Image (cartoon, rainbow, N blue to C red):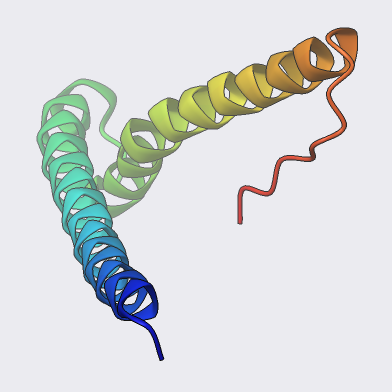
Length: 102
């Protein structure tokens, strides 16, 4: 093994560590978003319960899903649109590389 292989192995270890940390941060952010959606859903359900007379649990489920799902779908749509745009730009420039997002 040469010294350049050792340098690459060290770089690989650092990259794997960085990727693991980013994955943990992703889950923390997702958990925080879920907690905020549940809290906002509970508050909204509490307010709507007095106005509509509907069940708190049903309102809480529906509003929490809306608070979590609607922004999630908007982000997903934006990402797909960006990926499609990147693919069409790559084809327009004659690029033969393919994109692998995971």
